[in-house]
Length: 269
Image (tube, rainbow, N blue to C red; front, side):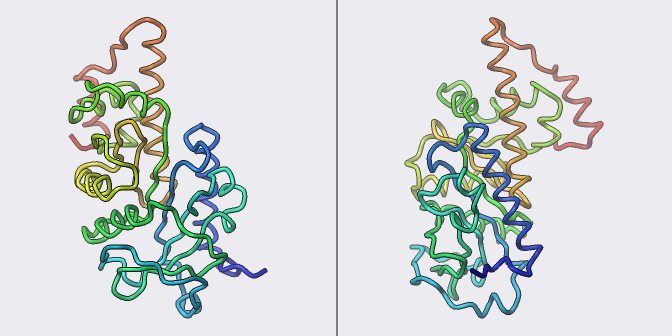
């Protein structure tokens, strides 16, 4: 069976990154059953032959108009597909889609008619917003990091930047690799437009957003960058929780130490 990836090494590498990240999510316990979603804008790797490819499924309405995505192409995890299966067989558990003229619908073009994630409209709304802002973000990731979700179950961590400051203080690398910190979205129905809208608002200020009692959403220039930001935040959460389990409140880096590092590495203040 031929694949859209045949003879297209750059496009194949993007799918390989998705498969690699999907495996990490499963190994970390962040992707139970079919939990989590990935979408990656692959338009820059599309050639004329791909543009001529006919749809292999019906046109699907998005329920909204996303003008910045008209004519764009995405690789998406399939709905009800498991991350562990996406890691092993990405082209059987994900699909390439094209946003049709008008930006209000999509069609699947390869390899198999795997319906994209049920949260596709929300993911695409984020991509549309980021493109409209002129940002070079190509990937959106939703997953369920255990420690971060646990910390969202108490109101004291849901105030603006309280959790960001705490996590930054646990280990220097956290601010270096997640310099914009962690946005917070109070509980919204999973998959709802309300959740998507609230997340988009947070993306003005943050690259990673914590959904109360649910999970996180991260964006990046590629899927590996989006994963890395969640990974470093999760490590800080683990350090904090481990210290608490040992019976003490961790001191964290002092304000002076944080200022020193911020200046030394030219990080956002």
